[in-house]
Image (cartoon, rainbow, N blue to C red):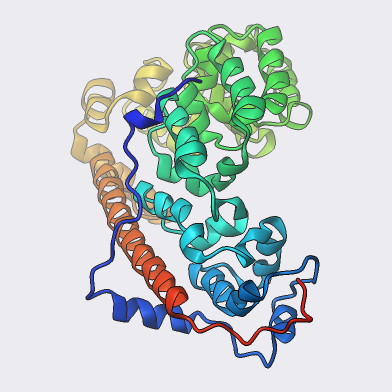
Length: 405
């Protein structure tokens, strides 16, 4: 886990233009808490229990620091929990608390309030010696979308590199063919918990799943599923249905362990072995057939049956072929005939979209999400700069020497 953070320049504390400041000040003032007659009432308003004395200067700045938390987007009900888990937020200037937040923004994380609520240690953390180091480690392991990772697991800032990260990374790295970055991206919390993933790894190894690393990389949630409530009962069910080599079956389609038996696996298996006239061996040869919906399985079978070609082709060709190949090569019909057949079926189950249309819709949707995220990050940066400016100019609250928090 020796990674050079210096080789990865960190973009911190980007300045705000003068044109942004009026808007920022308005945002900051709108986030300020309701006026309180005394500091004691202000603490009661936020359910912050007295625990340790604060310096008079810190007491005078208390309202602006609570306003800073609220302005970030920390819900009122969560302010007390943030203060309890990181008491330094009441005694530290907001400017000293902000480097971790600025770093999150530079990585593309816009939800500062949600991040602070879940990980109060982000306030005041050292970027270069702590959070930046951990991000560099994740990047070196192959985690590509750091913004998404930190949005799902801002508690990374509280994880100890030696006691928590190292054991988990070494365990995952010890498995040949396992893509550590892919596993950590999909399991940002569990993936760094060696005690949680070790029993699951050992179970799959004892089961005899071939190419264990590739198996886990194809479907990382396997390391989070409950063995007793999910994995073991499904393995037993598959054996009861007559599958001879369940470990190989799972290695070829790991997502089988994510499907509910009664609502998904059992109906599809009954359809394949019954009306569709297939055998267990056909399914073992192409286990991904169980990923298709009952409607899709029935539709293609019925079209082939209408063309007098039912059962003439294997499951792989029948269900993996493109609509054009399926219609013209397998059913010996035109694509227009197949699309008309699909349209008639769609009248009872909703409109059908071509694969190309669905792909374009997904592509455009991802582009729109990227635009929204960039806009959200820009707005969050503007808001943070406005809050810092407001905190710098805020007049101290008249201190109450007898108050302790």
